[in-house]
Image (tube, one colour):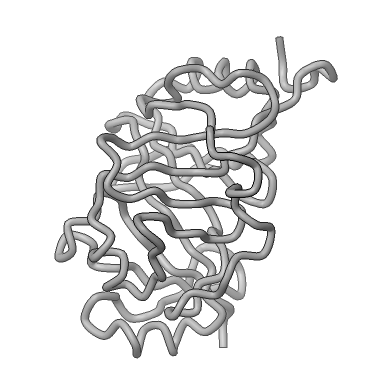
Length: 210
């Protein structure tokens, strides 16, 4: 089975379970509703027992992807994330991309083929002083960035789209680094100091260059 098989419909990432406290994410300017944060078409469920990726539609997802537990998003349809979710107090409107670390390129490619997902772009980069490959895959409007190399597999981070990166940086103060040029042309990025907040993944904010 391959991503080019017309009989295969890829599932969509619609929910990410995280074992974090809601108060930590509220400190970064997110609006929490009883442990649920809606960000565009993806929702974050906080206080979960483990990190888990949840999917809707398409074929049945495998139980794991790059060491991350996977399952169906079992919420009723009327509770599914909306195409246009509310703007958060920090100015975030959507998830720009989800970063997943993988240490087995062949197994990762096999999983993506079975799911009907196509790697749209590949590039070589450096992460933590190590040479890695980056694979970019679309899951609906969300980009999944796979970092392939000799590194621990798992969910590395979430990059959010902010409508005003400078205003976000001012609002969050010491909790976020200064905006700097991103790899993407005409874009900037600011990284949150998540260790200070006991957040389990790297959090970054993306915005247009000025």
